[in-house]
Length: 509
Image (cartoon, rainbow, N blue to C red):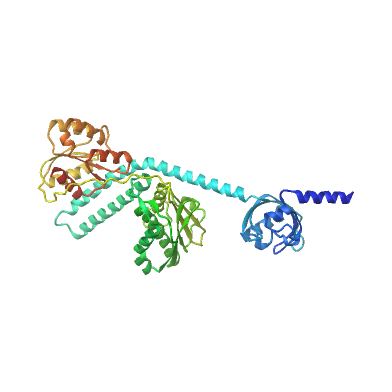
């Protein structure tokens, strides 16, 4: 009777479609009492392999040695584990994800545990979980960028108006004669810092709005070589070594070469700064290769710097997030890189562990990317830089301080100037008197620049051809289309007063 029961148990043991393991596990060694065929299959052992050779819980089977210590502690404390996730090595050394449900007897004097375990191969499920999580994070990031893009136009407009006022007044004051040197230096500082703020706003617009770009078939390796050449001197004097491993025979990608270079520059400079702060020197490895399955070219930038901690990695592409000291970075470099790669239909991702450097991977599709319209070049007639001033100018601007600075500069240049705070008041002024040109903001209360232009075009088509638009929001598709359609000159806020005066002279020439 007992022999029949033992035989039945043995048949059941052999037929179970999960790995069954019975044995001992200790701090430094294991011993196998029983292992069914499915366990051998999971870990890549031959079906005829002696059970004593099947030791899945040996020290060298764990990809992370600390995971073994944690497993033993859990079994010692609780006596069992359920669906315990582990990454173990098969007989051929390849990693496999498994779930372990096990019970253990109380530890012996030598801390060895007798273990009975069911082992399931969950590698495919783990792969699907990881892919799902990656897709979720990509969607989350895209939603963040979309939400920010909806508000950035207004933010840029509000920032550019005061910046334009500051730059205009700083420029006017700096042109006065007899200024003391400290005052002149102060004005130059105001001017340069305002222009720096304006560059930050332009960076915001770069990632917040889709721009028209000039794309062509690009040799990624050539872009890499040209970009590294730009940094060669700086790297040489700061003890940064470059190793390039560029694959031969790469297919070209349909991309904007300048934007790809901007992405690469951002990543290389970030790597340089991280290594210099941590070690005072470092090595960057730049690799390229062709992924035939995905039909993409992959660019990797690897550094041996301090790496990026796990808790910070989800934030690195967020606007204004930076690990640099105050004043050392704006937190926009990686955001801009992310936006450019996304616009090209590609992907950018990070692999890093704290203390072990970082690798950024940029994946650019070879084919299938949506063709973007080629940027239109706005024709400019030859400037009449030396043309004499004169004429009557209407300034239509709702920002009073900016309007005052512009009007004063025009009067100083010899023009007659009137001012209207919105489109409706401007039309009233135009009905009351004649003007030779109009300088008009695009965004205004009551009647904005576009609506004003449509009404002016119907009432005074000759004057409509002599409108100069100024705007703090030039990256939007609607604004671009309107300016192209109108054919009018325009300046982006903040602008130099000298550029505005040239545009007026050109318009009146």
